[in-house]
Image (cartoon, rainbow, N blue to C red; front, side):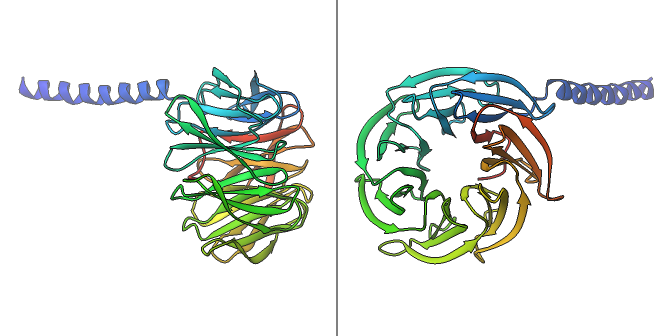
Length: 331
């Protein structure tokens, strides 16, 4: 009798484990969508990475260019530069949550690592704005005149300095976050665009859209100092982390390539084809695939970094710019 009861328990346990496994599979969350900002159509393409199809379009304000996740990861903020607004979207379901108006010319945007500040670059109006963030609402604290056409932002890990490129005056500007005042400015190569900093805050990498590579600046002193030019390809523009805290990718918009840079050796160590004017990108959670907006081809291009080839292209809207997914590598 005891043996029969033990056998029943064993079989029941096995059945329970099997049922639990099947239940977990059934209720497993679907992969997070990939968002592609169609900057000249005032909308966002939502891509299902399981079927590689566009499942919906999200209407936004005019000229959505860049996007950023809120600190609590509950909302993806899409910045509508010409629409003077922010569209908040659920990063998992792609449902619009709300629209915040009166945010002047939010071309590029970032939260400071300490989560106290929300900072935007007004590309067409030549200023950088500092907003207090209380977890829900934004309050403008100061508007800092910068130079001609602030483009991209980078904030150091201590939340003490925000760096901005000046696209049309060819400068790199450092702004003290505590006082919201400019600390220094240095000349750069032609049409500086995106910026990426090393984990120790010592070096900044600046893409030269009007050149053929990436400039490296040492910002550990009183002002930025150019130390190297890395040849990557014509139209070096946007960066994205490779996920290992050592390598980054840069899109070369004119050369139709993406280069992988070793931040320690300051060298380009790999190159990948990226047709159609590659711009902003994201990297899959396993680090293998690059998702990049092909600006002139109206497509999202998927690149296999192991095979070093394009594996698919998905039609999207006109002039795709920002690309983002919640399922990405470590930033």
